[in-house]
Length: 424
Ligand code: FE2
Image (cartoon, rainbow, N blue to C red):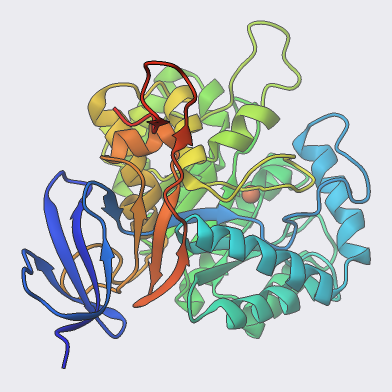
């Protein structure tokens, strides 16, 4: 009998060490020098980076791959995107939404993205969005961890059935509480919604992940209420604030008080750099604000910060590929995380730190962890962010789910090498 079902040999781990990884069933059962070990399947990863899978802590799977339907977002704003989606969700069938989402999940798997937290719109009374995403969650379960967040896109109170439908979605099996306080009618209503949502989560024992302060308004301060409620209700470690773009524009003295409160409350932050950089600042002349929250400043306070993708080919964003390294690349630039330590951290943010934020159990490369990993055509994490290279192999729960042959460019230049890889 072979020692392992699957053996990944000689790869470079994100910490720079080299190790063989032995897998039995859906678990990593050995990691280290495994010379002479026998396995049913062997992947030669010598010279390549082997990492735990990519994790996306913020996405919208119900809207993905719908770009241009019913129209393109002409203003490029968050608000026009919400209006367009409001039209689309009334005409899109459950089958259409399932098909689009499954196509995106195929893209994700091919990129080594094996866990996604997706907000699902609970606004429409028909809740087709929820029905569709629960079906997708069931289908992809063998190979992709899909968390669903009940997201009242049109507001918990602003939409007449907003609160009732959010509760219905939770009763249907959606198990993270979402919200959008900055989109409620008033600052007070936004504050009330944060308190209400955190109480719903506390009563049901669920995590909270709110779209929070996704605005250029420096006085949008729902993150303060979120941190306060997380602490009051004992939700530390189970709460995330997504976007937090207003923090870009806040008064720095106020932020110096706010950040320790967020840290104390154990609230994580999920900026979405591709989207924040394109949606925010649309009302500005020059200088034009960039709308990314204060990433390095939060990290310096010990706050866990991940990078989320948010949108791919939908009413808010025309581009996107499902590659979390694209997200890390943009985040690195906009947050000016250019030191070697910070560049490396951007890679960790889209792998282990995102996994921690969404509470993903047994993620990582260690004995006993889920046997999910990615082999990248890169030498180390910083090179991976620079190249956003091919995923040579993707293993999910012990099964090879995607492979891609190494594909070096062939040069036709006299006196120069025959192939070029751009690795350095
Ligand atoms: Fe979002």
